[in-house]
Amino acid sequence: MACMMMTLRATAVVEIGKGQIVSKRIIGNGIQWDPYEYPMTEAKWKKTEAWVDDMRLGFIRLNVDHSFYHRELDSSGQPIYVWADGRTNDRLKDVERILKFAQAKNIKVILGQWGPPGKVSGVYLGVDEPRSVQMYASFLKHYRDRFSCIKFANYINEPNGDWSGNPNYATWSRAIKMLRVEMDRLGMKDVPIAGPDATGNTEWREPLTWLPRSAKDLGAEIGAFDMHWYALEHEVRSGAIEKTLVQMKADTQLIEGQANKQFFLGEVGILTGKTNGDQQPRVKTFEYGLLMADYLAQVYRAGWVGAIGWNLDDAMHVNEGPATSPPGARTLKVWGMWNSQGTEMGDPGDEARRPWYFVWKFSSRLFPPGSTMYRIDGAPEGVRIVGGSEKGKAIKNWMIVNLSDKPAEVSLPKGKAFFYRLQQDGTGSNGNQNPVQPEILKSKTSMMVWPKTVVFLSGSPRTFESRL
Figure: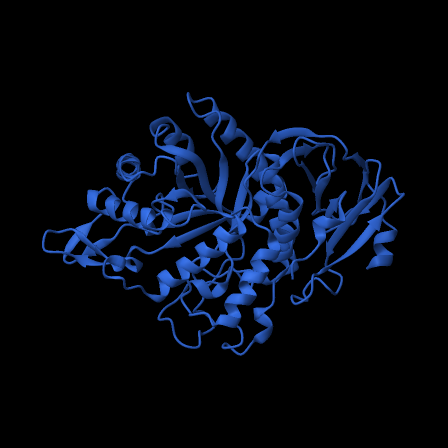
């Protein structure tokens, strides 16, 4: 393969020393990290924490089911919380461990809830029932009082989906207004609500309409805009992600009072290839990592301040119940950076880190929270370049993604450059080792970015130092 690539000619030479500023003070890369369906051993917890720490993430999205933190209604119809008598459960122990980790590592947290309580003690509590809002706000306060890392509230996951327990936009909108009042009453005026948290893609039944709509209707209540987008592969390859996000942000910022709010993606993944209800076997492949790198580059090029990958570990969620022990082939949601139940399922190798973990790790190191982001244009079709700098200095870090079948040549600024090249060369699927090798450019003024390759380029060798 290497000999064949050497015979190809680059289609263009791109100067990467300059670019257009598209955002300042990003949040950075994030990951969905929830309580586990399958309990973790202490050894697995420590390994997971070490791997997450090594990514140097900007934020974590942590969601719970309402049943984790309350039991029933009392005789006056008010909720009884798990912590009222000092008790807890395994799910809340997971919540606390994740929050303690985030607090220690200075990682922002979005603390959310999957859906409304539904029937409790024979009473149906819907999305906009006052007790439903009160319960979530009380849960939020219980943890926010101890963990200042909680920076955003997220009441209902994907409220435009029929799986959310939310019947329509009007119901959710009423609930968000009630939630803002209740959070303020409980002393959480400084915690913004992130919304609308709606999901879709350009071919979905309600394509990406809730964000601008909620900006008009709930501009005073929503403090940061987030949405989910499980992209089809052609949306990534065509650049539709970037075009759509640029337009959505521009349109929303024209609405009075919304110009200075943050825009981020609360869940991202590649939808094409999903099977068995909710499993994505492609997460195990190098190609998925390449597509996620291009997706992330488009998010940052569009001026959005971060993206949360779905998700950390297959073992957090069940695809098809019941949750048997060990899990069967269709039991878990296969979307993770690894599967901590691999050994129990007879495949210890499945516990290794998958290629897209390394995309998230090195791009997070290149573009830490607070970075200024640059869109670098002029690349040939199939090549995407994004740059970043810290503290208003010149661009010093770049991610270059080449999804095309031709090499691209980039012109480098003066000075030393250190880079990792992520390519499928026999090391890309070895999850227990970094599937990339460091190379140092001291005197070259240009470099080749080969087809189906991601290059992480930095002016500082410290960018790639591991904490492991």
